[in-house]
Length: 226
Image (cartoon, rainbow, N blue to C red; front, side, top):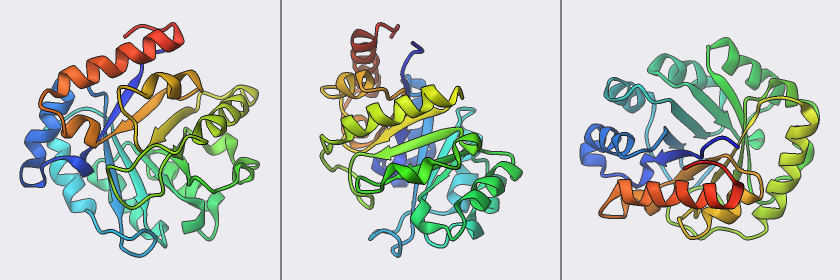
């Protein structure tokens, strides 16, 4: 079992000093910068665009994981790729042609991910597993940070993990929503290997302590190393 990958969601960071926050959280042990893009159309909130991503890129060499909660989605993919994204994921409901959108992400030089909302059925994965580098399960309904983890996500995680094993591919299984030190172990045991955490990290006085506790919990529940 690989060590946990902690993706720090800057949606919960101090927007007035994002560059400093990114450097601090990566220096505290986070592995990935998670970038939540909302358009006040597909989801009821408005966050940031490619210019902010480009401004943050010089502040870290860590991967930038861009989660697009926008509709339509294809127009913004090349812009985020140019801005320095390493991973781009999107919701199938936001694309007219999921296979084409996945191909576009890869053509732009990024890893491609598909995001499933709590009520999105798993059959959207049936014909695209060979194009995926990441599957992101939402454990809250997208649009706002600080929500509570939806428990039935654990069953969905186990099912998706089995699909990944059967595919024989190295696909990351990421979870976003309500992830904290006190539930991350159970989430990891269900199959997740990449964990988005926002308020759990940025709302704490000591980022390093929270991240350390998260990785320790994952290791204890999976037999890995913190």
